Every structure is written in structure tokens, then in C-alpha cells.
Length: 62
Image 1 (cartoon, rainbow, N blue to C red):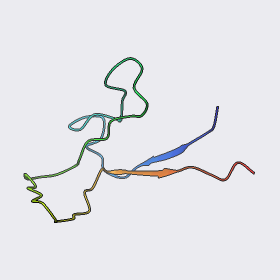
Image 2 (tube, rainbow, N blue to C red; image 1 turned 135 degrees about the vertical axis):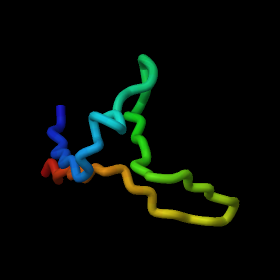
Image 3 (tube, rainbow, N blue to C red; image 1 turned 30 degrees about the vertical axis):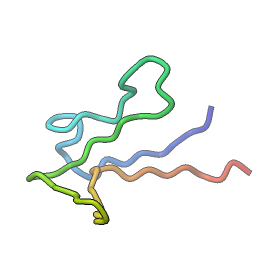
Image 4 (cartoon, rainbow, N blue to C red; image 1 turned 180 degrees about the horizontal axis):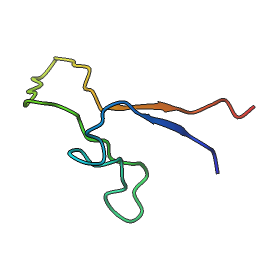
């Protein structure tokens, strides 16, 4: 199994916002939550950077 370095940037992670987790058995990936203080509405055609409060590094295995 590959090691993934995870740095928690926002102290609310694990308290107010849950850590990434698999939502269902057999899930292909973890569900991330947005760390927002207010609602964000994204309309068709818009893009936004959404903070997760996490930094993830997956190193080169070669």
C-alpha cells in the first residue's frame, strides 16, 4: 500500500468538519468536505477553489 502524507491546515478538521472518509462500503475514493464559513453557490459555467483544510502529498513511487 502506498503512503500518503496528510497535513491538517484547519484546526476545525476532525471537530467541526469530519476527516475524509469512505461513505459506503466499496467506495472507490474518500469523500472530502468543504471548509466553508458560509454557503457557496456555484452556478453553471462558474469555477471556484473550494478549501478543504487539508494538504495531501502523494509521492512518486519510482
